[in-house]
Image (tube, rainbow, N blue to C red):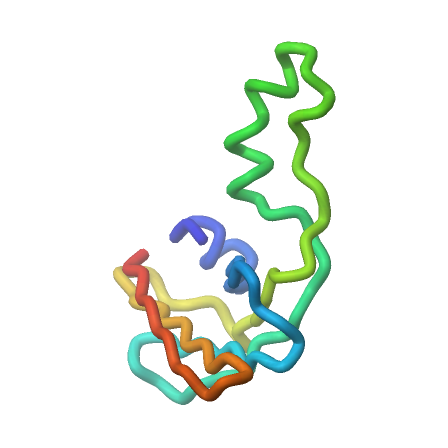
Length: 104
């Protein structure tokens, strides 16, 4: 997620590779309350951007496809102008917890 995307769309989109439907994926903005993210089947925008030049070179095999391990959350209102931190927390089906943050 880029800062511009977060302000424009109010949406956090995260690729949690190898995450099953039994995982719980949540996000927190600036240390606020945890919000449950929704599993969505979409193309990963990062992969689309990364492969953009390859696709223009005439290699149709190099294209992004919908993946089943994308998770989204739309904030009720866009973050205010300035610097923010979004934290993603994943609890897998074994109960193991993982968290990562990104400043935007």
